[in-house]
Image (cartoon, rainbow, N blue to C red):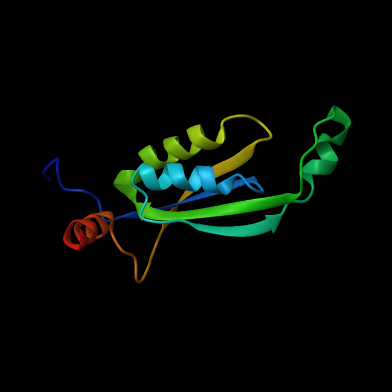
Length: 120
């Protein structure tokens, strides 16, 4: 297989951050090559009670970021998200990546770039 042929496999990066922090993390993901992101609101349970005696205040309100992207982009996007959101620090947030088995309607990164060039 030629080195410049990119895998069509998809990944999903899921990040859980404190409420109000998603915009920074999403901006970094898109700048690093992610085609788009979806942000959902949620509320965490369990961890706050466990960390209470340590004096760590964890707000239950969360933002959940979903990014589906081509596998060849996942490492650079994940690194950008971790850096922008300080997600490598305990208690700040949580990020992980999973394989996507099947997706319909997905727009590949090169299609977005081609559309931007054609539009302006």
